[in-house]
Amino acid sequence: MTEPILEFEDVNIKYRTRGDSDVHAVNNASFTIGEHEYFGLVGESGCGKSTIADSVVGGLDDNGEVVSGKIKFKGKEIQDFSEKQFNKEIRWKEISVIPQSSMNSLDPVMKLSDQAIEMAKYHTDLSKREAVDRLRELFDVVGIPESRIHNYPHQFSGGMQQRTIIAFSLFLQPSLIIADEPTTALDVIMQDQILDYINALKDDWDVSMLMITHDISIVFENCDTMAVMHGGQMAESGSVVDVFDRPRHPYSILLQNAFPDIRYPDRELAVIEGHPPQLTEVPDYCTFADRCPWATAECYDGAPEPVDVGGGDDHRAWCVHADEMETLAAEHLSTSRNATNILEEAHE
Ligand SMILES: Nc1ncnc2c1ncn2[C@@H]1O[C@H](COP(=O)(O)OP(=O)(O)OP(=O)(O)O)[C@@H](O)[C@H]1O
Ligand SMILES: [Mg+2]
Image 1 (cartoon, rainbow, N blue to C red):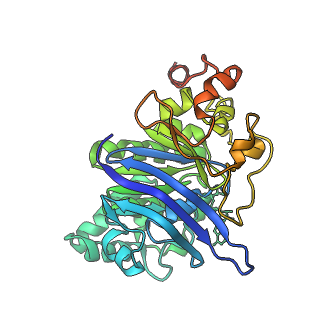
Image 2: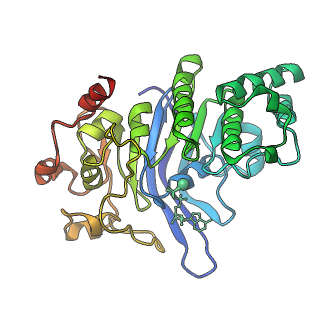
């Protein structure tokens, strides 16, 4: 791996609620994104993906809190940064976020061109004209007529606002872009166009990506490394090829059957029976155990620790049975439908 740009070390995040039951949304999450790496984070709705994204830029809802663990950006701990510190040192310039819903991300009372000028004034040496030209270029990329740069956000449709946010997130060439379901609200043609552009960015500048989605085919086609989450816990992480071809966590193994099939690109992850538990307490068990065909008493005895499952670098599964899964799940582990084959099929 290249030098790490973002590191999560045993991070716990909870939301306080009015009752006495908090929501322990993220528990002991650990992963690393290297410089110049595109990292995909997948998992069912509610598993904690956006919570992770928001925590990186101090953007958790007011009742949310990083309870423990370390979040490091370029080696520096940022989990205790104040909003002011985030705004001054991190947001937009170092890390930009394409949020899951863009509705509230643009200043409603400012023309978009003026927002670009403000951003440039605060963070760069660009002149007003250069700032506006840059926005123009980016509008072209995201498919909005350049003439509309002087509009106000409310003059745009939801999809156009989403594309505007994407344009702004690229504006200062940050070193990390966090894209939380960046294209879900867009039509398929626009989705492809934006993903192609996001993919091509790598060639232009040293950018890394945390891409969050429940569409695994997007991860498959755009990312180098990935993690699968389930019920507020990490399940498996590693290179995209390792996780797709040699899954070692029961959840990823069962998902393998639903893994990207180019013929059904929109197929989602929710193909496994049952639901993750409500996390009103820190789970001291594997949150997948109730849904797992291979669960034993041990799975309820403590939260799972990561196990190195060999193969490529940093391929890990948070499962007490990780080392036995290849045998236990032999009949589920297909050898024919692997990542390499699927990619070849796709390009035929
Ligand atoms: N402000 C909040 N207060 C209380 N609970 C919250 C809050 N925000 C999120 N949660 C809960 O935290 C858990 C994780 O939510 P999160 O939004 O991170 O999930 P997600 O993986 O991004 O889901 P999706 O795929 O639907 O976007 C869920 O149980 C959710 O209900
Ligand atoms: Mg989300």
